[in-house]
Image 1 (cartoon, one colour):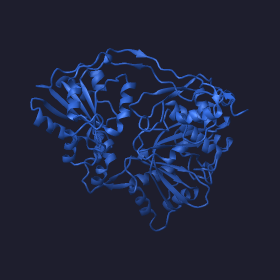
Image 2 (cartoon, one colour):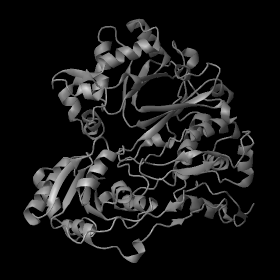
Image 3 (cartoon, chains in turn brown, green):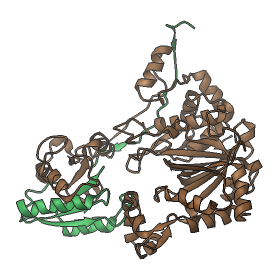
Image 4 (cartoon, helix red, strand yellow):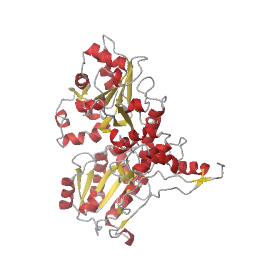
Length: 438
Length: 99
């Protein structure tokens, strides 16, 4: 779209057929509904040269006309009049839904893909007003903008719009400042990636106890109203405020992701952690309340405790089971956190992260051959971006770090019923204050 | 409240931006004698695919000069140097293979 519109070069965009609706929608929302596009079968990945030549020689996967005919005509066929000059037009979202019975409204919300397919609380004016009373912010104040992918337009939303989604999720007003802070991140919990990613939200500071969040036994769910509904609200507000999360149009996750039901939302167990809280690591005071968001939650490794003889090998093995494109965040029960102190001498969280960085390694040849590394890291390495450019110089059998040190994180959570712990593959995005939204 | 009583509820959907329709580039009269850039978005073996498309042009439309050009980084980043090169040295572009 950039080459066509900004640089004036006639262009045809090639896609796989599974993406026909989404790419046409993106082109239209970018003001180019007439953008010329052609479609080959999915997948391209892993096909031989001969198989891909058959794609070139074969029909367009959507129109069934020869794909090269679509390409050549796309570059040479003049536009009809309706593909004409630049114009601007508005779209609007009404404040209210047309009055109806409760049964019909529930059906409408379900049919419009405004829910996560579980029952919701209807956002009546009374309920939304009660939610709004939990913040000093004005209902029409803009909170932020959000979009499901890099290429899509960002939609805007107000405090009232966030409140509507908080009510739908079953949240109570006391939770609203945390939900507003999540909305203010602008980080979508309904990313459209075909990898089926979800988010994780970690709450720190006094607000955890003020609103009864669970940081101990069963914190990751489903056993606490605040954890459950704040996380659900984050998902609902994401899909509705960014303009949808509908499979085939605004959501392309191939398998979907159960983590998305409540965005892995919990409080850190600061009181039982041997280290400083996560938000303090990121510039907040211990008495501040804050929420941190992580994206790309797909992979999880787990084990029990740290064995005296081979704990180092066991941790390395866990890393080697993860895709190196997605960095690790360790979710440690307090028992295991103290074991890392006792076994490894990691009195500071930073010391543990240093060790993890040094020990999460794999041979360079294997690293660079991962498909996601090829897609997202190798191009940046070839463009000279560090640290990947230096990694590219390693011999194929040389062990190289799987992750950047700054991408490795540690959070303490759990009720010490045992020393189970997990590595969540996810990328830390940002930490925002909750207090600013009270 | 009865099952047939109506209720008024708020719409949960955010506010989309205005759409500004953009004019597309004029099409070429012919590709004969022209340079077409095959832009590799560096995603899921798209390089292998575009090499096959280049071979197709060589066999079926030899008067078309094709240049396979990988973008400079990942597709998430803008790449003005590549776009400028295509505008300066090319007449048309085929970009692929996106999802």
